[in-house]
Length: 127
Image 1 (cartoon, rainbow, N blue to C red):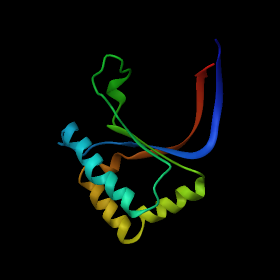
Image 2 (image 1 turned 135 degrees about the vertical axis):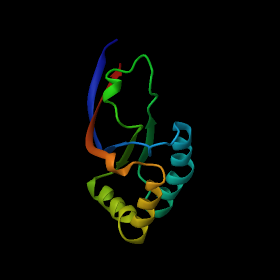
Image 3 (image 1 turned 30 degrees about the vertical axis):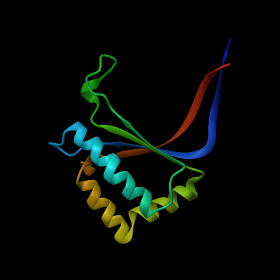
C-alpha cells in the first residue's frame, strides 16, 4: 500500500496560538474556554465551518523544545473562503460585540501573547 498527498484548497484556515492568563490553572482555562467563550463566539456571529481547540499537554515525553512553547492552545477556524472569514471577523471583532468578546478573552487569555497565521493543509493518507 502506498500513500498519497494532496493539498486541501477548499477552505480558508487560520491557526491562533493562545496563552492562558497568568495564575490560571490549565483545567480552569479549558473549562472557561469551552463553557463560556465558545458559546459566546457561536452566538454572536456566523459559525465557522471548523472551530477546533487543540489544548497542549505540557510536560509530555514527546515534547520537543518545550521551553520554547509559550502558548496553551492552538485554535483552528476554517471558512469556505477569505470573504467568509472577513465577515466573521467583522461580526465578532467590531462594535459592541467586539468589545464583549475582548472583555471575555481578558478573563482567561493573555491577549498580548496571541499570534495567528493563515495555513494551507497538505494531507497524506494511506491508500
